[in-house]
Amino acid sequence: MNIIRPKSRQPMPTHAKRVFKGVLFDVYQWEQELFDGTRVIFEKLKRPDTVVVLPVLPDGKIILTAQEQPGYEPFIGAVGGRVDEGEDVLSAAKRELLEESGYEAEEFILWVSGQPVSKIDWAVFTFIAKGLKKVADLDLDGGEKINLLPVAIDELINLATDGQKKFGDKEISGKFFEAKADPKKREELNELFKP
Image (cartoon, rainbow, N blue to C red):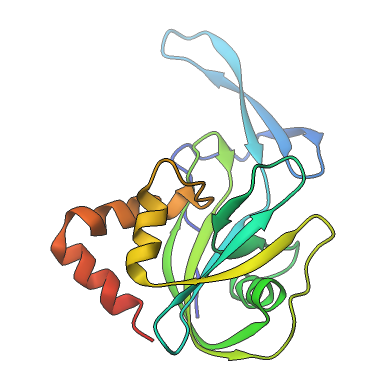
């Protein structure tokens, strides 16, 4: 699978210099000429890309996770996490699926990819995983508590579009709002999530 990294809506120029290297975020700055000829310093963050995986069980239910992490309110979301340095996106999706659910999949479909925030160089890749096989127990990081939550497509749409619920994957919520409002989009979603 040839996966192309989506471009930012505000690309960072090649002459930008890293002025801070953090654990998760690096800060880049560059001088930018404005329309009136003055020059100012622009700034942008950079962080590792992430993968989101929505695994589809043979019965058609989609595996979500009920998660707790230090410093966060409990939330419901998809399987996923950071792409490690030197790791390709598909390998990261496979690794996160295995670690957070114990499943492997025969098929990965890249559903959505984009850079959700213009001031952060950060791409999010969302996959649908099918042909699941349970092969292991969960292998979680020390800062994760995860329970698997298989849901029907209707439940997924409601969770992703209910502002009162704590759905953690805001980058893809728009797709579920579209499906809720447009019967054609809903049919496309039903087809996509067929086992």
